[in-house]
Image 1 (tube, rainbow, N blue to C red):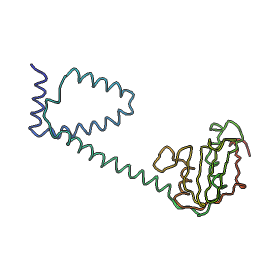
Image 2 (spheres, rainbow, N blue to C red):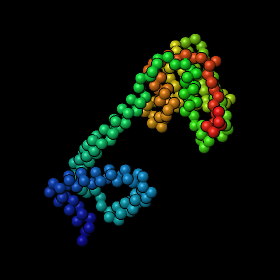
Image 3 (cartoon, rainbow, N blue to C red):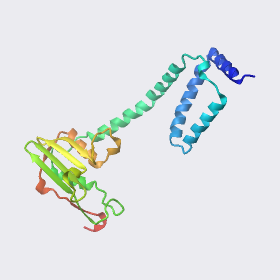
Image 4 (tube, rainbow, N blue to C red):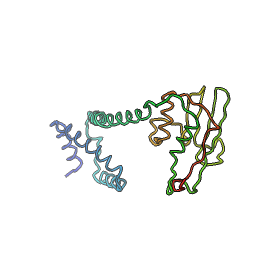
Length: 228
């Protein structure tokens, strides 16, 4: 008995009967579910190896099976599934993120000293957090040239200007751009979403006026267990 010919014959018989569409749709949906599961499974690589080994043993060439509608049918099922689930979830997540970044602020004028205070409040000052010492002091560098103002700051003391992880560019007292943790902020860069990033993007979206009061900036902070 020629196993390959038998398999090809059965596939063509199923196609002619009209059951192939149902089989493809069911298995494509099953594959989508398996992909998600296997992505987080410890044996994902092993499963792929077993599949490849079985395919080699069977030796079935799909080139011998004439199914012209196969690719379009699979594509339509995948698109439908993605549009009905992933797209809706993605839209909800994006709307939630954007709303949290663009909510109205209580005032339209903010001082640099207030921004630094907000930055310090977001530093992990717990005993088991980032602070090894009980005392910390931020670095702050300001280049103010008329309408243009570049501000560099960092949670650590004595950090050189261009080594600071935070950078604000202010033009005519308006926040033009910002870099948080060495990366330009964006509401779509999910790994950057944090309290200080959200605060800065809120300032940007509300087009607030920023007053550079360098002399009033308090750069010192203490570990939570310091007792001060």
